[in-house]
Image 1 (cartoon, helix red, strand yellow):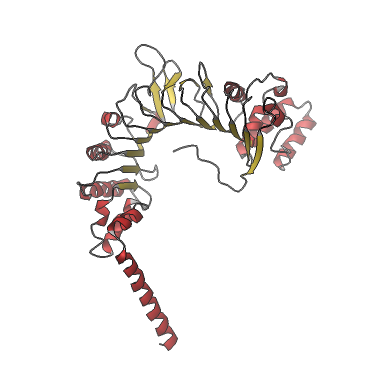
Image 2: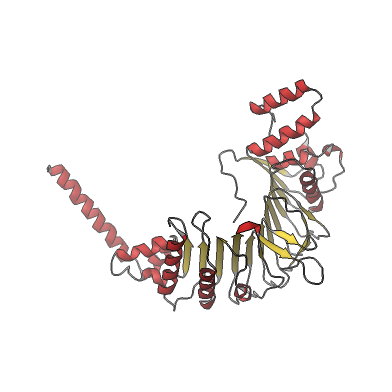
Amino acid sequence: MSNSATERRKKLKFSEIETRDRFSDLSDCVILHILLFLNANDAVRTCVLSSRWKNLWKLLPELTLHSTGFQTCKIFTNFVSSTLSLHDPSIPLQALDFNLAKATGLLEPCILNMIVNYAISHNIRRLGLCFYSDFAKIPDSIFSCQTLTHLKLAIFPRRGHKTRFPESSNLPALTILQLENLKFCAGDNGRAAEPFSTLNKLKSLLISNCTVYGTGTLCISSATLVNLTLHNQFSNFYTIELRTPSLCTFAFTGTPYQELSGSDVSSLEHVEIYAEVIRYQREPPLILFNWLREFRNIKSLTVSATTLRILYLIPNLLKINFPSLGNLESLRVKMEPFSDEFRMTLCHVMLRKAKSKKESANLRRTFREGLEPSSLIPDGIMDFLLQNSPMAKVDFIDCSRKPRRPTHL
């Protein structure tokens, strides 16, 4: 072996020793903080590094249990069971995030009960559960946990069933609630579903692809709610009644099928809307327009270019009386390319207005070649939105290189 090769190996070994020494100099507190950024599977693997690392992961106050990297559901759930049984019981568990991907398998009820019981018995503060299963019911104990401040539920039972969110819950410390693919049901009195009225500290609420059974009305009643986010990808028609005197921010992503009725949104200041229409129906553009009419006092509005195009689908939009947005200070437009699905919707709408076969053929060709629509922003739409607040600051933000925003948890 040459002297140069020997020298390189010596330098490499010295570098490895130096790195190990640097880690040895770190306190347990710092190392645990570093481990918090890892999935529990990777954090547990550090136990082989040295005798000092053997039990460090057992002291983690937060556990991220994701099925990524596990070949089968059984292997993953065995790992979860072992991790929880070996975790130091004297350490309060601040957060547990459990995620079982559909490709990995279906969760068994006994595993869910084990996870929930462990979390609650260790005074959990932040709990996230995302899984696919053959069952729709989840433990009632989740909804009476006295220490929970943040709850995330994304549950996907097979055969189209949805997990029912309780009509009332006893979560006195809860400030953040995120729900996906659940259902809200009206009470026995036949009134609107009103599942959040007992959450006296709720500050932030996210509802993603949920449905309403019974009266078809979801009443969001909360004196403390500040932020409301809705995601909707499906034809979930229902009415939302807002009783939220402290609501400051409203954000929406997806197709607008939810009417706002009898709502007091006078406190609302900031609105973000990223609308999408996969196939043309007359309701979503009108619902979107009615939202903007409700948002009379907002100070800032952020919309996507697609949102403006959807509004423009309303016949004679620019001639409609529009008394809202009089206090607007900022209008931001996210300039992102139209999805292929929305381009097909636009093509369908324009073909319905074509007066001849030749015009229809030309439209199909221009859409196929990417020549239509000729611009992201429809003519006159900005002046229409700003007619009652002409001094508002306008920003166009290039989002062409950014990934599409998620519509799920």
